[in-house]
Length: 329
Image 1 (cartoon, rainbow, N blue to C red):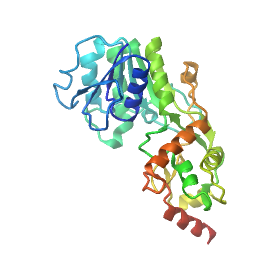
Image 2 (image 1 turned 120 degrees about the vertical axis):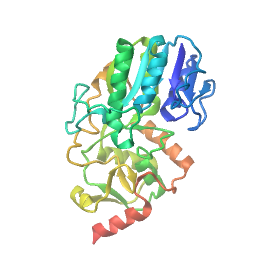
Image 3 (image 1 turned 135 degrees about the vertical axis):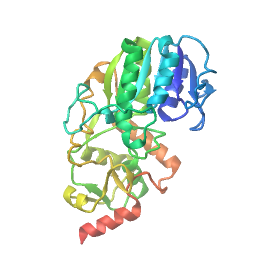
């Protein structure tokens, strides 16, 4: 196939490109080229999507598949105007942030969406609204040639957010030291491997599959996730359970960000954040590699970066020690 990737130098886009090249497809990536190198075997068309002439250097041909990941409505609309009529299949990678509410475990693609952003350039705080606007633009132009993939938390080697690797990295960093764990073992976690997501998106384009799908990873109770992280990371020290109410009182950051309890969210109204249905995507062929394999690969990536580095998600050693001492007191 002739594949066009709008992006292709950042994480998911590069993974799609790499897998597409490995499958024998011809891949063209349109990007500024500032987020990193493109996949070996792909072709880069350097372009700034903010410019009116952004796509002038892109080959004027029909495309078997186009992949779009941007959340800026203006970028998405510009690409649709340039390539929408010449694309046999179009994939837009959206987000679970597109939904208006997250309070219902098991919710599916029929849940109410946010109101779409009204401007072409959007700030980060309107990320979900921007994704909705991009979805609507894609539907209007490519209609029944479209896949919308509303992604949940994406993890795996190359994850720049540090979220999905936080617990296994912590287990490996200080395997004999006490490990602070929220006492919420049944709380849902979900992370989809970037490699599984990219492969499935390519399968859709190859097979001509269309539709709207929530693409989340397997649902794993928080206690099982932590125990698997301890096994893979080699943690043998004591586990220190902390009540959720106490952690909230201590104003411990939830889910993401520096000094957070990564992937842990008990904020009211987020009961379904990590536990959407996902049944439609799995019925359409989405499969997930075993969680142990996923975690081992993530740990290898974490070791390359350095287990003692300053993290974007997960408790620092100093913060964890401070909380353990406060809990004992």
